Image (cartoon, rainbow, N blue to C red; front, top):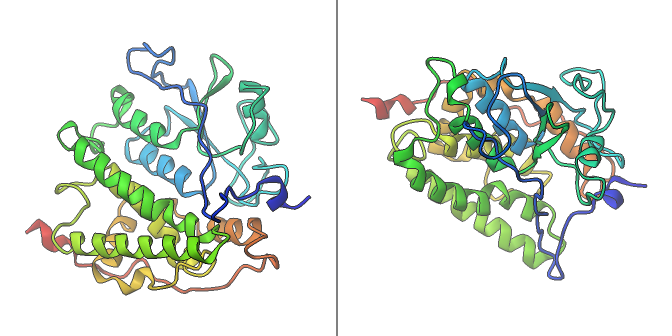
Length: 316
């Protein structure tokens, strides 16, 4: 059975991509009112370094200094008909908590009747022996707001109360047109759906380019959750989305402000060191066999993320 047959892209009658709902949605709370209290050593994070949604959780966990509080496993980037797998290999690992061979086992242990994709990131609770959530937006927000007692002393406030309304507003449009927009373009099964998604994507990127001409970050004058959510898409843009998902009106490097902003983030602790281009390219090009049936992984593009940027001009 092909990967596409086991994990079909969700498209509607018009050929538009429709992302599945994330149905395991409990929350962690500092006071434990949810039944899942924030505790050191209790939770385990399952991620893929190829997945932009999981990459967010990896960055936030590192920025906040939660590595010793929340343990982590990385799945093999090549997902076949059995789903995400735990193996020994470069950059990924076995499951030290349950000894699972496949992520699907965590989902089935949580809910034997679970249907749908077995997605990353997801958060496992050692005490109850089940997944707490696979709803990726909640994971980073809970790390930021409910684990504050465990943050390192100089941890950034990535979701400050005074900026939350604006952060949420920016996140909503960036998700719709950019984060999910590249998938809507890549998995579209009609020309009309594809063109609609690509048009919306680049209209939003143009809008972000103008915004970043006036300020260093997306919201306020500080790094926030909004920047992390955008960064993980930008980190994959030229190497995957331009070619593999046909998002090729322009490249990231064609946007002076957006490309400078992306390099600014990449060169900060917690960002560039968590970008695994090998995992990213092998996952996308070798898993989506309806898009790339030969499964050939391109060598390029050659992009230097370490060149100087001028984003510090906004600090003056």
